[in-house]
Image 1 (tube, rainbow, N blue to C red):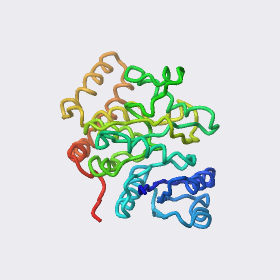
Image 2 (spheres, rainbow, N blue to C red):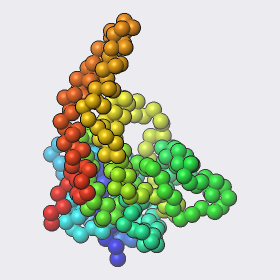
Image 3 (cartoon, rainbow, N blue to C red):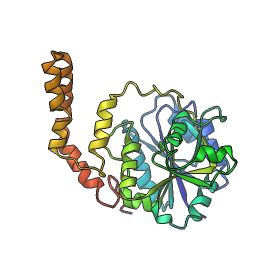
Length: 308
């Protein structure tokens, strides 16, 4: 029997706790669950401990963010002998055969070592439609796979390769953890999965969605839900940390200096000042970016400690 450890980071998860953890109990493939709570204030901790005593519960003394908290769970699961690591959002649940379907795809793959991430098909909270973000990820891969056409013609394959899927439901083989590592602590919340996928690509591993495995992600169905983030900053940082591309101080300066000069010459002084402030912020993190890149480019358990 394959050892699957489900890792869930919680923060005020009471809205979903019953469905989430009950679904794990009903899995046709037995799983172990590790929860890392980031300081919930709605009773999540007590509820999980009382209603789901089988859960290995870790209470963080502070909000570690998504990546660091998951890394704690990954380290613990590895020490407990996990063969597969299933990262799952708190606002999510599975079906009885979700894990078996993922295992079937993995076990039947002739080149298992190149599997980086397996993902089930993400439904939204209605359980009748795809999660809109998941559907967008599928759609932008039309150039390399024809999953929608195959579905229309009732000729779906068991899996399709994609370039990205978010970490609401990730099935990671042990080899991925050992060669790619954990999440980069550079990011506190949001973008951790994008950065991780960049490393998956760097180490020439595959991301596949498995059409027979269905799960639910009851996230907000709104493409504007992350508008509060500084999108340009996040995109730059993702690019700077991408091991598939070169990064140095000259590239860094090229992103800002010409624009600062241009905005100043056009008399747009407030714009120039905002860009200059962003430049100063990014410059203050230059050493951290360089150090992070040195770690993530080396094959091995980046950002986590797997010493048993």
